[in-house]
Image 1 (cartoon, rainbow, N blue to C red):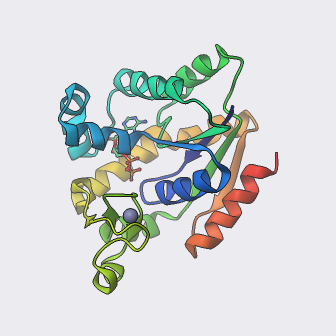
Image 2 (cartoon, helix red, strand yellow):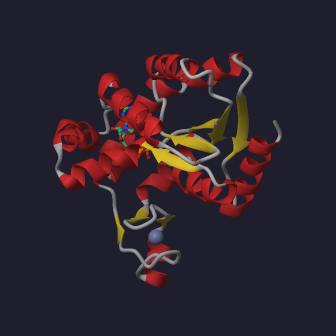
Length: 214
Ligand code: ADP
Ligand code: ZN
């Protein structure tokens, strides 16, 4: 299986891009944040365990996260590859992922780092509407022009962790806990950096190129 990790700050466009690329390349898309949000909606054991962390923009403890993600990876069948979106997010998660994949003779084959300047991240996160159906993201200007999702007709909502204070916390957590993964994966030679600014389609094209050139 072809294992790809999407790395980048909140607001870098990981979710949007991962969905498009997964569809294009017939890969599974596994987004840890989406899985947590679904568990919270279902109000199951996992959901109750992680709710406060998401609301506060803090990381869910590694053990909980790793257990959930590894279980989902093990359940995948009939796919040529998987895009991990939002995982790993700490060096410890990355080490555990390596061990788990290594146990099946696999590895992280490619890491796509979507680079976006901090000011742009803040701007995007402060004006973000997300589709409940397909997780596509829009701005308030988009929303006024269309009311429901252009792709699937789903309802648009604002994530409770997109408030200014929580956005600040999430960015701080990202720079402290997750940004070190850039160097970590650079050292293993699996990292490709892609410019995440500009048109969505342009970014998609750059990522597609980065993934297929192997
Ligand atoms: P974003 O990248 O826009 O912040 P995500 O949907 O990827 O959004 O994540 C939302 C929240 O889910 C995070 O703030 C965190 O609380 C939790 N989360 C997601 N992935 C992980 C992870 N790998 N480790 C710990 N917590 C996570
Ligand atoms: Zn949609």
